[in-house]
Image (cartoon, rainbow, N blue to C red; front, side, top):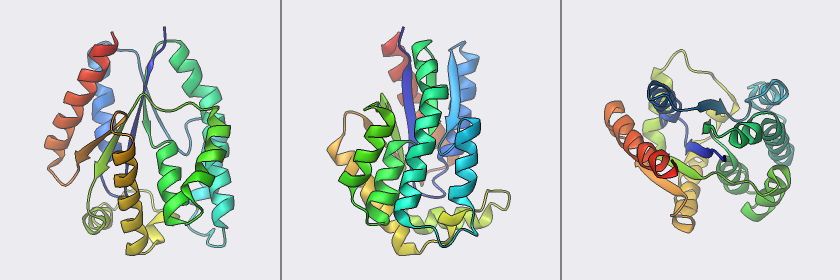
Length: 211
């Protein structure tokens, strides 16, 4: 049996991580086989790479170095957790995956989407998510949420300019237009309860169809 690979994407402060946790809890309550994971990270080695990438003191990191580190972490995460879980029929809920690299490094870092896609398809051997949820929010609102959330992890991405975050959002919209079958947009400016409900309705439909 092959499982489902559902990724959660969006700009900073969109609330996707909180929503993912709630969806995970609900699927567990329904008795579904479900795994919750994240990128960069998700395995011991990948988490160590995450620490290097997101360390706010690593201001001198080259953009291509950053892109390669994300791809390396993704590869390790894939072979250790994602592929084995899919082979065992699990539903995988992953906080970020390849789309994040395309928008953050490909567009916002100006490396080029095709260049970043190549190294990531090499890392994943062409594996893509079954479905992707894109949590859309104005960067100003997302960053305001982060500023109000004192317990949130502070990382290098929080130091970027507002223009950078607008490029990220626009790039996600472009990806959604190109791949409407896989990417489903959720208005993350709504209340948390509304966002969770819309996400749950979508995920429930996808998982029920797969049964």
